[in-house]
Every structure is written in C-alpha cells, then in structure tokens.
Length: 189
Image (cartoon, rainbow, N blue to C red; front, top):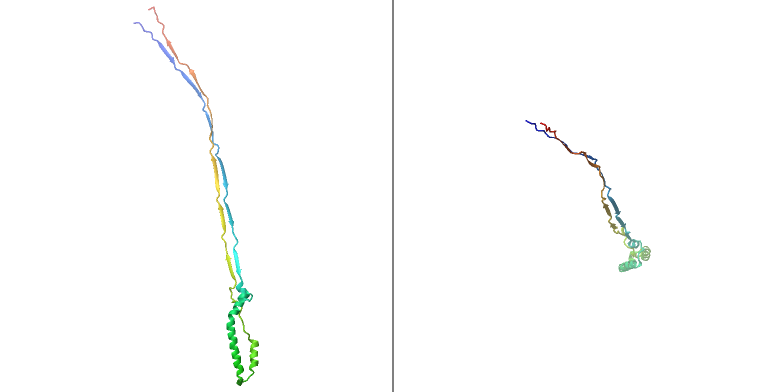
C-alpha cells in the first residue's frame, strides 16, 4: 500500500510586548483663605455724681442764729403767757407790800428779785442731736454696651492636581507565522 505523505504544519504565535511606566499624580490642597475681622464690644460707663444736701437751719436755730422771723414768731407766741406771769407777779408783789404787818422791807426784796429774775423768752429752737438733716441722692450708673461681632470670611481653595502620563509602548515582539511543510512526493513509484 502506498504511503500517504503527511503535511507538516507548524505555527508560531504572535507575541505582543508592552512597556509601561506608571503615571505620576501630584495633588496639593492649598489651605483655605481665612479672614477674620473682630469688632470689639464697647462699654461706656458714666456715673453721675450724687447730690448731697445738708440742712443746718435747725442747728443754727437752736444756737439762736436762725431766721429772725422764726425767733419773733416764738417770742410772739410766748407773750401771752409771759404777760400773765407778769400780772401774777405784780399781784404777788402788791400783796407782799400790803402785808406790812409781817415786817421786813418788801420794796427792797421786790427790787432784789427783779434784778435776779427777768422774764425769759425762749426764742431758740429745740436743741437735739439730729438737728442737721443730711440727704444724699445717689444716681444710677449709666451703662451703654455696644455688642461686638466677628466677621469671618473663609474661602475654600480648589485642589491643584498635576498628572504626568507614564510611558506606554505596545509593540510586536514576535509576528505570527505558519509553516507548512509538504513532503516530497515520489512520482516514480
């Protein structure tokens, strides 16, 4: 039997080469722009002076240095009583002089009593420990407050991104190939 020749087929696959370097990415985030303005609070305090009133009129009146109209008014109000006392003393003096039968010098005694005792008008005011009136009027402090405030202005800055591409080379390391080998046919047989 004749032999059938065999065809021999060999193939070579394609090889692709890839040369790649990674890219570089640089990201920077600038700080936010931050501005702050402060208006300080203000406080204004004003303290008006108090008022001090000293009234010494009753003290001066008790020392006999008061208003003359007040002194004359006191004397006038005592005149009736002193007049009645004077009338009573005159009656008593008349009765003493009329009592001659008792003896003694009634006129000399009456003259002696007149030199010692005279009618006393009380024109002084009343003497007391609290004759000086002191009045103090305090005034409230005036406080004005102006509120302060803080003005904040913040702006976010965008990130700065830089990207440098890496290298990417794609090439054929080996091309595909098919080899077909045909045996020689012997036509002689």
